[in-house]
Structures are given as structure tokens and as C-alpha cells.
Amino acid sequence: MKILTRQEEQILLVIHQLKDRAYLVTIRERLMDITNRDWPMGAVYMPLNRLHKLGYLDARIGEAQNRRGRNKIKYYLLTRLAYEALEEILRLNEALWADFAVIAK
Image 1 (cartoon, one colour):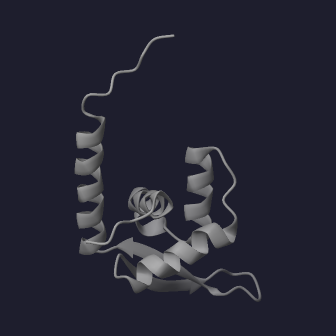
Image 2 (cartoon, rainbow, N blue to C red; image 1 turned 45 degrees about the horizontal axis):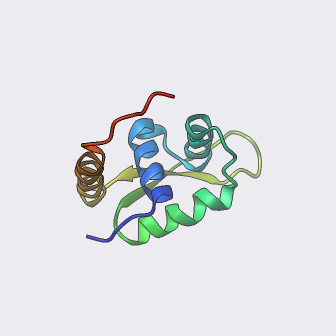
């Protein structure tokens, strides 16, 4: 299985959290809320495209918003491959962090 970047991992986890509300804007907003840092649109859009091409995401087109000139919204859903990758990442992280203890200052 291909190793994902931390950024890709975070995007997949946010899509899982958002369920059927996961599209570019909501994904970006959630990432900024969780990480407390700015995520430029390109920093979300490029990995989304890549993850979609690699088979980690399915996409469906939703209805356009009522505003004139708005494009239809592309919603993202995790595939079985994405869930398998995230489970593998979780197992790996648990093994790597198993003996770690926080040292009190």
C-alpha cells in the first residue's frame, strides 16, 4: 500500500468526519479549525485530486448553489482503500507511540 503524507492522512480523516458534507470548502475549514493554521485552497485541492486519482476517494457532483455563476459542488467520500490505509496508519502510530511517556517539566 502506498505511504500517505501527513497532509493526505489529515485530509482523509477530515473527510471521514464530515461524512456527506465533505467538499473543498468544508474540508479546508475543518482542517484550519483542527490544526489552528491556514490551509491555502491549493494545499487542499491538489492532495484531493491526487487521492482521487489513486483510488482513495470517490467523488459525486452535487447541485449548484443558488447564487449565479456558482459551479456545482464536488463532494468526496472515502473508498475501501482509504479506510484500509487509515487503519494501517493507526496501527503503525500505535506501535510507534507505545512506549512513549510524556516527561513532566
